[in-house]
Length: 607
Image (cartoon, rainbow, N blue to C red):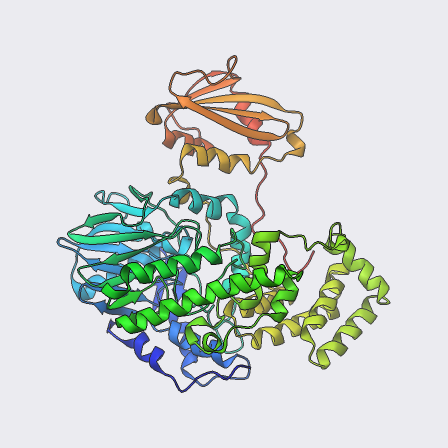
């Protein structure tokens, strides 16, 4: 292991600097009494690191678990430790501007209440989303409840499109894998979940979304919210497809969104996402340094703790820039020598100056899976070897491996031999084949769970640890269920009509609908626009035009005249009053009959 500077305790001083108050107990509940956040569960991190955790990850957990309201600089406060992410509050002339309202409405409301308890009952006069990930918008209704007076809601261009594509279109699969990644249902314990590197875990309350009212479309764009001047820098393709940094000139403060936190981030997150561009990530960090470095006395992000002092900010941004540039360029250098993603991951090393920096350690992203993501971005899933062009799927392949190895008992025995010699990686490979070949074979499941325990306890990366330990838990019979619902009515209410139709289209069971042919027209009166839905060859497509203009040849099988809220209710299965129709009303029922129901708890470590 790289020798790390454990004697350097500056991060602990910075993580505690400016503490105003804490939430005690640090427990947040939903309206039904269900606990959606419990930061007190991490009290065990005050102890020395045990043998069941990597000392570096234990240190990161100690830092990330610090909870409370903190003063960043005069007029800017952060609530940390009440969700995976931070909520930042900037005081204006009349009230307070909220930046990134956490994941859940319940935790966001608790964070705002903690702020108000110490700074007065200031109204929320503006809301800013730094980027399109759910932990930065999901708690919106906790700070802007229904009935709140309208306020400006700012977001980077493309925010809503990407928030929907990630949280709705692929939301079911991502939410299932996120259960593994964040370890939300693992026991909080020295041998269990100790954080995820970026924060502690995800809250499990109500995800909401208030649509943006102001798009930030260019770097240099300036807006004034509640008397506070803000200068924006667009950073698309970095940590999110739609993301932005911004500067507060009056406060000499720089918000770095999630582009420069105190860890190596993900080029491709393990829960799944669009592959990020490490090259432009480095470029935008350098641009932020050029634009705002000399005029900033403090930088803060949507996770972790701030950095104070122009010199330290410059060093932080420089090292983060060099990290992403290095892993991008060296991955390209090696793939152009013919190495595949896994081969690059085994060969590449960071320069010593970067490797020893606490803020660049692979607690959340890792060098291993990040360079594979760079390979994937440029080369795709295929490594060029024809043997990997058309392999058997996992179960069929597993049965053949087990057969070659002499049966299930022999496979488990061989795997145990590798585990005993410390080759946990290959032991996991063999036992994974055994479980997929015979999922009911208890010794194979138990042996694989034991190997995953050991891999998890040795991992410096928080998300790797959580994946290993959640897999072990499920192999032993406890299912990690999905609590967060990214497709709930609150989220659906923020979607455009096009996005609503797209969210239905991805649920069409294509093979069952191969021979179906129908058209439905939607006249959405409050949008002053009409849509035609066409189901043919198992695909649901749509087109639109201003109200009254032709949508195609001939009439539709069914025409519905309704408002967008009525459309929402209709798609949710209700029969709202006031919807006018002409044509065959059974056409809608026919379309709905072809819709599939997503599987929220699909198996991952078993077939």
